[in-house]
Length: 228
Image (cartoon, rainbow, N blue to C red; front, top):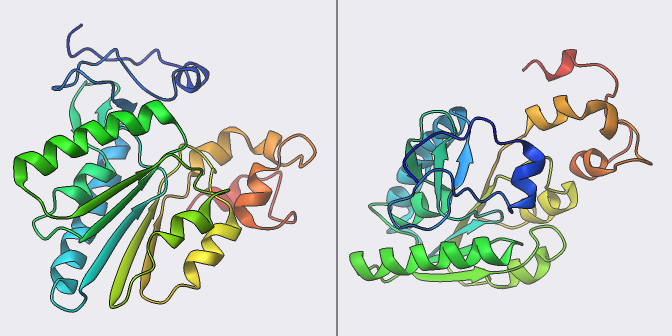
């Protein structure tokens, strides 16, 4: 098993494997998540923001919390080239100015176990004093339980939301937006909406988009408004 590509991997196949990939060999031998090239650009933007944020807030708040509601296994690979990069959780953990607390959430037990192993290796190797908590919870259904873990005095937080599809509910965003001193970074999965617009337009068939937008009267049936 070398560093080959997995361009023939279909979405339904990924779901069956909990979005874990064994086709591309990772340095530690554990499964990773394959992605398209654009994902790396998204992660570059995330790192750029977190670098600025963590440095600026280091001396202003005693408690600085990073929350990742859809953490993934920690490593991802370009499905065409096989190039491997850190995922959002490891990017946050390896900042030059780390957060004091990390809350990594994933609904898939195996994925979270892989991430936990990678976090342990980083913490041991770099002797990072940050506290890391991995939660096998649902980023939507268990949001109150997740947020209860982040209640601290003199605190500022960042919540990163990057599901595989329109997998975040608007009600969750409302709760996050109501928290003082919390920044929200969300990836709006336009590609998922475009692919499944017909399905999502029928609430009786699939109400995922309704939950994402927080209403049933979002624009349906036309793609022009998705061109941004």
